[in-house]
Length: 143
Image (cartoon, rainbow, N blue to C red; front, side, top):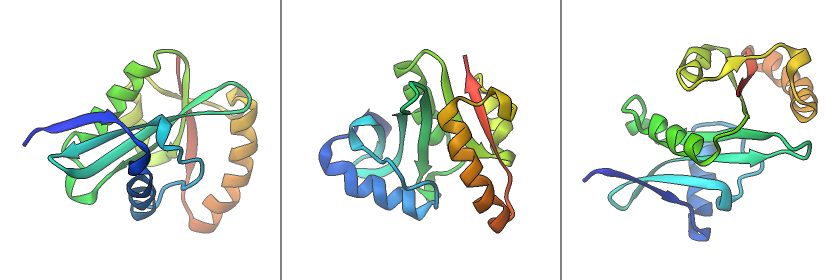
């Protein structure tokens, strides 16, 4: 059965939350109304959202794919659908080892001085967690 994409509905919220927790990405601000869902038949396999910030910026966020479907283009399908939905300036945060993946979609890494205000506040806090877990993150933007 082919993989299909659709806007999320309220009943998807528990599945979104469960997948985000399963793949261990940021579980904050998971509003089902902003999500696109990927399904294989009736199986929920991926999701992603465009998250608005209080300073007016928008963030590509919560891109999550079931482990059995990772590396098969499902995440790219979700990304492309979200990018078509939101053609303007977008930001994202990611681990440094994912930078080249997002560059394929037109994102470029920013210096701290280029971050919008909400991202600066978030990144200051995130640095503490990144040091604790010994990972490096970055912020990227698509114009």
